Image 1 (cartoon, one colour):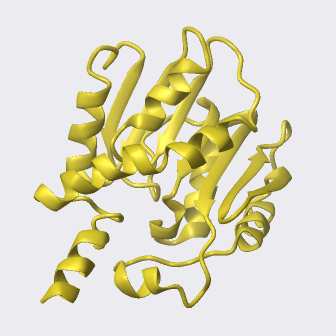
Image 2 (cartoon, rainbow, N blue to C red):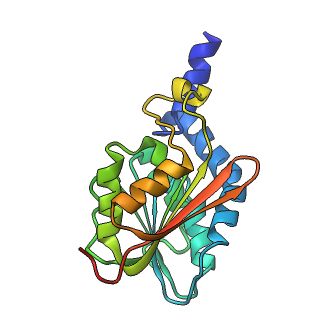
Image 3 (tube, rainbow, N blue to C red):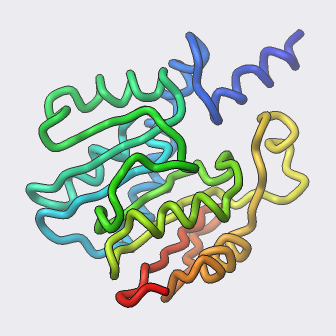
Length: 209
């Protein structure tokens, strides 16, 4: 019984639902802060940027992005209805003015080509179906010269979490870096912060194939 409750709770990492999902979103907003703040510190920002956070969860990353670029527009997308509701509540003072939140999937991003200066993905690529296709979608919506920033906690292939959380796949930072290169991103960089944080950054080339 306890094992089932434990598994049910942590499966909400992938797709928060109901009361447990709302608890998980509060946990995410707090628990992801150190990784997100460190990862964003590796990126150069300027005024009036247009940015997207995929798998925006409880919406805290949207606020962090907004603080780093004056007069920015920040978009968030998440597959979970519960996440979208929480993110909208967290950002209600700037909602539909500077922050725009949509329910949807990384497999089919509902945005125009070459729309964003920066795209972020915090603790979410583990759950993206058909990851190579999703990376192509990210590349499509980035402006030439735009930057993609993946922030993850490093997991072993046989991690307990992949057994506990349904639909979760563990990727090493090196695998993610290689996938980005295979998707024709350039200047891929891997940064590590002990004990388990990793940030992988990549740029869409100015001239795209």
